Image (cartoon, rainbow, N blue to C red; front, side, top):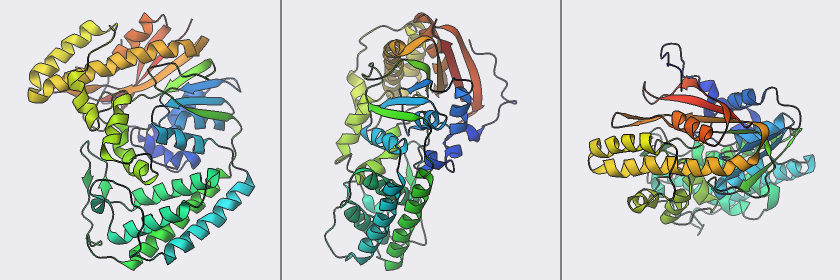
Length: 414
């Protein structure tokens, strides 16, 4: 069980979150709010012998495999989202100086080509809903022109150029990701209807600065190695080595889908084509709720029992009763989340060598005043699978409300 929480002694410890990754080389290439901080990840790897195998079955932005490679270990991870697999592979790649020189020249050529592009010309743009809310006409033209120029490249050169594009498109967008429903900021310096060539020029220049920053951080090579695999975390991915440490942070049971923030990147890089694609992909992710992933919950039925069914059933019944029209749907969400995590824990058990350790960073949640102690239910599942030394440590307060914390659920395989 988790020890009693001293709420006054705990800080928010933002150095343990994605905010700490912004200025840490490759870790800062793209932000993702749910990502945990590299400092936390490195701390969990302290004491591992050189060349240890570190596995992350929820790769996200690739923080764990990249940190493992930086420390001379063998990092390996899986993710169900093809964009995150692509990003992770780009972040853990070894970049020869010759390749980076090619990227530098390519970035200059892309900027020059984009600057010459006729604003009235026919350019491809992604099918992002109400795209005019995201970017002003000048910004949108610059992004479309940059995208068109980048299409002339392939391989590692194209990957770094596309990451630079992602950094620019989110930096100049009006989107705010500080709430589940997302919002768009009012920008008095931008006219929603008027094309401003100065804004286009500034956006293209911004791309050059981002490309230069990426090139510089990619020059620092990795002493270890890492691989990122496509795979469903509810099943055992093929091609993974037995792990000395499984270190990960799964999606939390709080209805915040990763794909919410990833959509602009995925549309511009053509991983998504139409609105329904995001919901279909999120249904494959544990805790996914975007679009049809939520409506699909209405017909969902469990395929197996879990060790926490009794306690979870009580909590879900209270959520269903007190949540009005949304109560039954959110009760199903909580049930499916922990059902899928039980499938995951069973699958990952075969990837941990005897004596290997697990560290799961996860947060609790509340629905209509009813607590969902994911950390305790994780610990129960691990004990059921025969792990020893199972313990739950409180790491930090979360920003959402005073009842929410982040935990490290640790265990060892005998």
